[in-house]
Image (cartoon, rainbow, N blue to C red; front, side, top):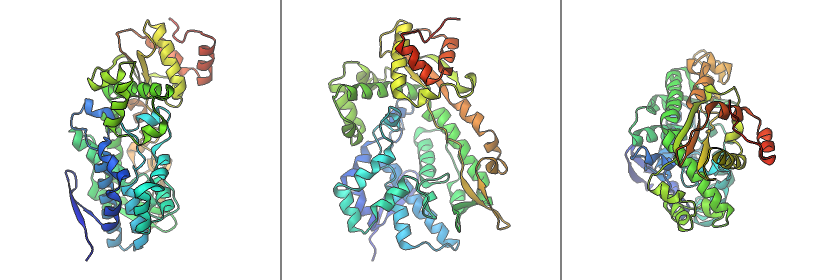
Length: 419
């Protein structure tokens, strides 16, 4: 008889772990994720947002099992080895994740998918995967979004189990209605198109559009909430300074837990930022502008070049009468927030790609996706001591190319011009 373990989950009720999942769940690399919160500093705004990457990975695994069962019921035979790799890739998709959500990737550290390899290839997790005859390179390709397998879209794609779980779980734990999606309908609408991979049928279009809108609402109201972004900006500065001073290494940060990392940062912190975060003394908004108020394409270097942003922050601080390290700029990036690239299997047997104008033909939201993303993004300046930052001057600076900003810094020219 196959031994199964049942885990009680507040979102999906009972999650059944098969022996292969049990073999990896009890390894140190996976157990670390019990102590890495899913939403970083969001708990400073939404007290219930203390759920972890561990809970989320179990949820993604559970939904992968449900999706595979649904495909089997509709006539798509799934090879047992394929199913095992899909389920374990869903379970381990966040194995390389840093503490405090995506803040450290924004700070310039490698993305968490790139770190997954070290966990899969070393230690007890690697031994466990070898014991159950799982191809680690195949798992890694699925985690990184490789499209070589028909069912790869379940792990990384426009309608993957990661999104289905995190949107539902984050909304539930934060106590907000924005991320509620029709998971059952979406799973029932999945199919596989030969040569095209995972697809959605027409009966899932309304639920798919609802998922996209839920994602937009969650970014606007939760993930990019001004206080969450203030804490994130402070935290990024704190970690970057600790790394630059040699008090810790990238490798130390990569395997830390939330509390372990903040403890280490507090021990030798000369900025006061670690204690301020611990006590929720956050930098306040001196300026808050929607991306729609900026020239089209302005400020993209603010989300792509953390070294340049740190230099600009210190220069602006001195220009408005603050000390370096007392001013933070935030302009988060999520280019594919409402992106779609998914085959649609139509009732007449034809297949169209839901991407670009192909998506606009079937989903009204796709027609206004770009403007919705721009309305959700905010260019904010946070300060530890009250100061005024002129909006027109900052917009002009943001509109400059990154190379021009570097030139002005090198030539010691002001970045904020009056008028």
